[in-house]
Structures are given as C-alpha cells and as structure tokens.
Length: 246
Image 1 (cartoon, rainbow, N blue to C red):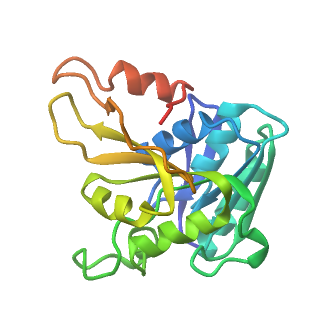
Image 2 (cartoon, rainbow, N blue to C red):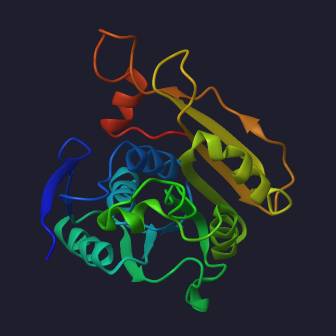
C-alpha cells in the first residue's frame, strides 16, 4: 500500500490522509472549497474529489446538517482514502463518495445537483507534460478534452444549477468555449501570485441554461509584496475559514 501522511487543513479543523508521493491537495482545493461554500444551495457534487479535501472543507465551512454533499472519484486509491477521511472527520451535512467516472457517470446522478464543482486534472493527455510519474498521472492527466469534462459536469447539474471550476489561467478560453451556449452568468475570478503578476489560476462559475452576461471579478493575490509575509490578508482569511464569492 502506498505511503501516506496526515495533514491539517482549516487551522486544524480537518485531518486529511493523502499519499506522500504523487498529487497532494493544496491551495487549489482550499480556494475551490471556499468558493463552493459561498453558494447557498442544498445539494452539491464534487467531480474528481480525490481524497476529499475540498468536499470536507465545504461541509466544515457551511456547517449545515441539511447540506447533501457527494464526491465522485475514479481513482480507486483516492476513492478509498476519501472514504477513510470522511470517517476520520465528523462534519455537519450528509456526505457520500461514489466510485465512478464523470465521463461515464451513473445515470442516477444526471441532473441531480444544485452545484457541481471541480479541480480537474490540468492536462488533457500525457503528451502535455514530460515523463509524468505513474503516481501523478491520474491527478494530472484528464484523458479527454477539457470541454468533455465541462459538458459532463453541466449534465450532472439540475436545470439552472451552478457550475464551479478552478483551473490554469491559460485554459480560460477553452473553459469559456465549452460553457458557451450551455451556461451564462459566468464569473471569472483571477488568482495571482502577487499584485501585478499575471494570474496563474482562475475560478470560473456559471449558471446552467442562463443567458446573463459574463462578470470579470477583481480576483485575489495569494501573497503580499516580497518580504511582507507569507500570505496576503485575503488568502489568510480563507485559510482561517472564510469563503469566496465568485
């Protein structure tokens, strides 16, 4: 069995077991959870939930015993760790993890969720990165066009349901193209390393079936100017349990 570590999230509110080698959840999961927790809906699905960091963080941040949260995970090892982490961390809400593939989901999941959110693998295929380690392939390689992943997420959402994704900033054109004609009220939140830097990530939200115009948000700087501390006040607030409206 692969080696694992126990890591702390939300100022000690969550203890997460995850692989010591390969993909490890970090700031992207924290930002995604903060944005998902800001959406006041009763049912949510995280697509590609990994070991459950964002899923559990949303439940802890919302602290709503009536919230129904489901995680969908394809990788068997990550799925088993997610189940373990759900048991290890008693949080409010009804949480469940399903072993399955967003590109070929259980038909019972189609159109069932008020919010579908995801931090998908960053690369469409193994030609996009150099010699990916086996332990990282499932987390970094999508195995299909990003547009297919987005369309599948929208299919899992209810009519007028919400969509939320964090991804590389350079994939924003692909994300917008996949959402075009299928969703509106698109919010784009750039995530920059520091003020004045180009964004490295974007949080993108949308409403299925809407025709409302796109909203370009002010975004967030992760760090203050050099020499002034580790995290910006805005990101530290999220690490301390804040939410992020997108």
